[in-house]
Image 1 (cartoon, rainbow, N blue to C red):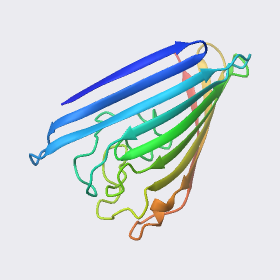
Image 2 (cartoon, helix red, strand yellow; image 1 turned 60 degrees about the horizontal axis):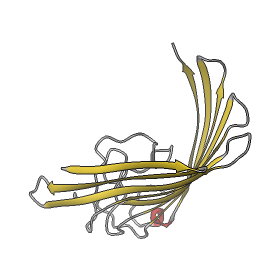
Image 3 (spheres, rainbow, N blue to C red; image 1 turned 90 degrees about the horizontal axis):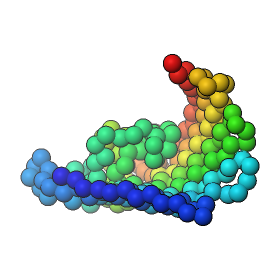
Image 4 (cartoon, helix red, strand yellow; image 1 turned 135 degrees about the horizontal axis):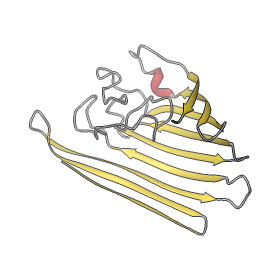
Length: 200
């Protein structure tokens, strides 16, 4: 079972957002399941012709006291790169993420976004999880809670009322977790992509 709530507010150029949820019940092995998550955000719109807006967020999702165990939060139906970075490296489970988003619109046709994340484990006894809720390496106890940093850039250009083109770049700087003995990969990562939108 699960219950949750979301609250949004704004006034005098200040913005506020809270979303949280709590899961409870029994796991498939008949053990008790208690898990949860929350996202807390505070934003500000600046008085400028480019409409700059700055958001500060904190995202938290519970893990477990055992590596790869089944009592952490499960986000069920993930929204791809909605909350935890455009590279989709981590699912919302056993993770904490302070992050900062900055957007502006230099012209009617051009929108820019910069989003920075710092990822670390909520419980170092548990592993990170993929977006599909599978454990990274369930047999490897993390040597550090520090997962790393991600920064995302996007530029969206409106060609006309029916067409848009988006350019995106993301960079991940790996943390000390990736120095854990037994992990099959290490190092940084990046991606570049374009999207063309046609509405009909």
